[in-house]
Length: 120
Image (tube, rainbow, N blue to C red; front, side, top):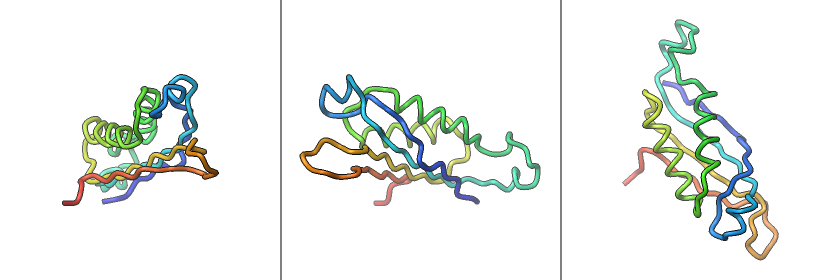
């Protein structure tokens, strides 16, 4: 088993509660980590024996281009797509951060982190 991470993915996306955010977009950063069995790839050195990181990135990019209101919803969509589109994902964690959010004060980011499977 190995933990694969794709960190610091940057997007300009139409995500936010306010209509203006969905029209003009906002800057986001996404970090994704997932566990999978990599033993076959370790032995074969073939991409077909692991989860293709570039395909995972394209999936995240596709989801980030869709209009959404909440970071919570975006996290759910990313995790759901990861486990349905890629065989062998044992667990996952996604963090979606809105950079420089308009919340009436100076701050770097606001983030939501989602885990799968969820703990009870």
